[in-house]
Length: 90
Image 1 (cartoon, rainbow, N blue to C red):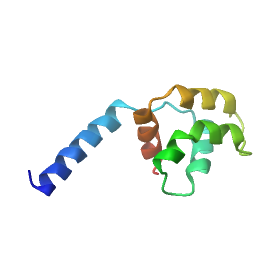
Image 2 (cartoon, one colour):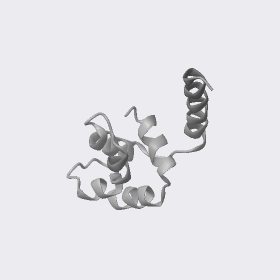
Image 3 (cartoon, rainbow, N blue to C red):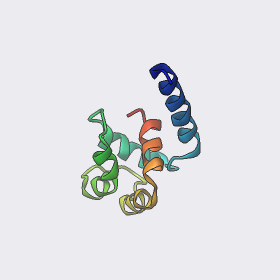
């Protein structure tokens, strides 16, 4: 298969994964994660460590329960975490 065909196939699979995965977030949780992801590019290791980053961050806003958010992220699959980071624009 030509490279362009492999890229198109991979892109199609990626888009389907993004539709099927993710982590539901309330607005305060979204704000916290945007703050943490604000560096721009998120490596796979940084994505995997988001729960720990939530626990360690000094970021706070009204309605944010960092413990609940960290637990939610710990329970999520890697595909869910990637889809969530993508939905946040990172």
